[in-house]
Image (cartoon, rainbow over all chains, first blue to last red; front, side):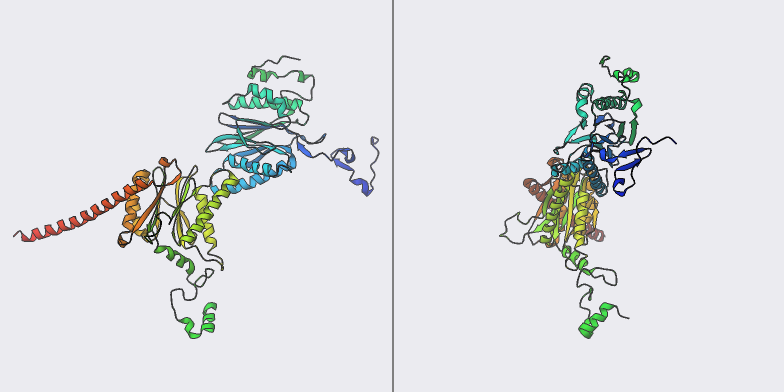
Length: 265
Length: 288
């Protein structure tokens, strides 16, 4: 047997809490800063295209400098055709989404119709606005309903409710706002929308330390909902491999022709 | 074999306990008692409260909904229009009441509260079907507890919303609620229901159907011709931007006059055709 590289941990009861075993790794619990709340630092984004709405998010959940979950799912279902994206403190946003799901379920059975996306957004807004001094949550509610079609509503920190065709949120959104402003156009096709979102979220993940991992995408149309994820080796900007990150586009993306030449480094 | 209530009657009231004074005979003292036939007599008595009251009507037309009621003028000294029966619950929902009017007004207040809280929570105006279900549940609550009595009124809720279009619901004191294309309650309900069925309002616009509604209301009132009455009509139609409004006063007056004239003409035509039949019979006999 190879010699131990670390000293054998003591088995005294008071010391047991200091170590946690996860698979092959031993985590020294004392060296972690537990005072930082667990956050979805995040990059989240939603875009209305011709025929539906597409939601995208990164997958990093952090607590200070520790990444709690590198493959987290920030896209929460509210109803069959209504979803929301979470950013801010994870506990707060998860609770709000759970309550919204409860109320919209009740509304759906009372109306016996697909509930309007506006109602889901209104419920989220009422929580964020009325408890704004206790919560740190910013959410994007998006979906499809038979009366108004595809819709997106942003509810930022203070509790405003705004309807938009393209919405971004989270700490990473600042790094992609220039790109979005330049390249967004109304009435994109599904493929154009998907490529646009993958590019912008990659750019945000590339620069923001609280965003990273994989890109999760969700597509909502009249006919159904489909999920996918873009794993780290398929990202246009490869974060792990520094030499390849000098290329801003892979060849596939260039062929799609977003039409911008940012040059090499 | 005697059931518990019969034994109680005999013990408390002696032999007189079994003199049947009315149909209920002991099972009708409170609303929380079921009779052996399976009826709740208090609820049936509540429905009787509306059977002899003013007629209310509702019709769904091609492009909207109509509501109407006839009101007996109780006193010459009363300010006209102060005895309201038709109310707007929200911009696009109207309600009309008959029976015990204070009970009805309490229900209208409740409907306003329900609509406001629904809009506050969900951001969309309440739909007709949801409001009718909630009011029906509310009325039904008063038929299960010992300390409450049923609401003695029938109400018709007319609504227009994005989900169901124009809708009409009739709710009775037992809490039963159904959606209708045309419905009536009150004293003249049989006449009204026949007339509405004959009319086929689904193919008429609101404007055309409003005249027919005035006519039907006058017809319902014919048995009590000596007593003065006035009509209250309202509609939800494209002319009002699909909001619930009372019929404009001059339009209502003009329709009432036309309705009365038409009814008189029809009555005259009936009499004339009777006379013609008799004359033909006489001629038959004098020809020889």
